[in-house]
Length: 191
Image 1: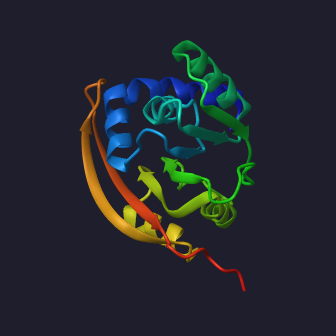
Image 2: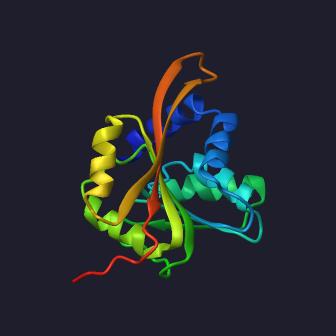
């Protein structure tokens, strides 16, 4: 995605997603103080900044995106809010994060866009702690397709599915399908 497209996307996302909605989604996912969170394909960092506030100074948020402007947006947001618990990586797959260090991975509104899904799911699985989980928010494909895309890797299984109906600040009604995929308790073994 080019810089202009990223800026346009960021503009619309900031107007469509209220801070109240973002906080509620992160609470529903189970983000809490002291956790380590991965916000994969974080875009302008709407969820990154709020997650960093929620995990507090004892927690950490890793934010990744392939667009270099994402780093600038998040750095600015972190500066403005006084956050120092965010690490930002520009990547198209490989994560510079140690194994088994992440409690919760967020894959919000991006699963339809991933061309290298298998690599992404393997990397997310690698960095998740035993008992950690992947939360997926789906907008552009149906939930059955999203579930299939994630579970076909055989790294994750569906833990719960919840439909969310939201009325946003723009007074538009959005239909969002939201579900969590739990991480297998045993680490995936490659044969």
